[in-house]
Image 1 (tube, one colour):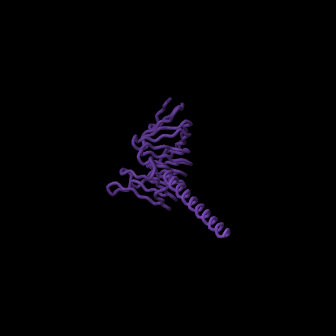
Image 2 (image 1 turned 120 degrees about the vertical axis):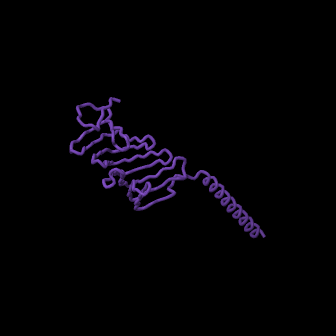
Image 3 (image 1 turned 90 degrees about the horizontal axis):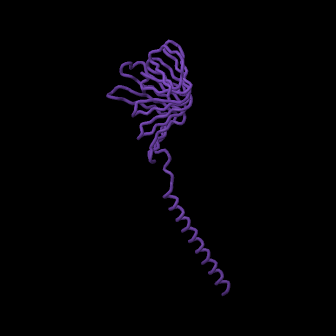
Amino acid sequence: MIKNISYKYIAYLFSCAIFFILTSCEEDLTKAGGKQSKNFPSQIINNANIIQRDSGFVTLRAKAPIIEKYELIDSPYTVARKGIDIQFFDKKKPKVPGTIKAKYAKFFDYKQFYEARGNVRITTNEGQKFAMQSVFWDQRKKQIYTHDTVYVTLEDGSTLISNHGMRAKDDFSEYVFLQNSGDFTTTKLSESKK
């Protein structure tokens, strides 16, 4: 009889222990579920080849090995972590696209703000070439800027260097070198001591 009681007692304790383990695990799962991170991509595009049109006219073509969209967070963004190659077209010169190439690019949806980093190369549809390590584009203000050293190669092959960055209209019709001095004889360049 003592053996039967001890077996029943052990079985009872074992079932209580299992019950407590299961309920404690269930509580932990519900607590963890409320604090789960939503910072994961809601869309992933591999070997992306994107074409943007305006009234039938191709305004942009973008290629990237991978593009990820993060839409479930407070400040949604799209990122190309393995680089991007963009061609942008002007209706006045549809056969000569401008280009932007970078090792990394990020676009903040609501702010309409772009950033590109890592060996950034921009070529305008007029043939001017800009090289820098990072560039930022505020689409709402139609302004591009960087604080990095910028190398500019003009259509005639001459080169300009800005050690402290630049600001530009987003079509590069005007750009300003920051904190530079010297004599320049180009019509597209203006100086700033800011």
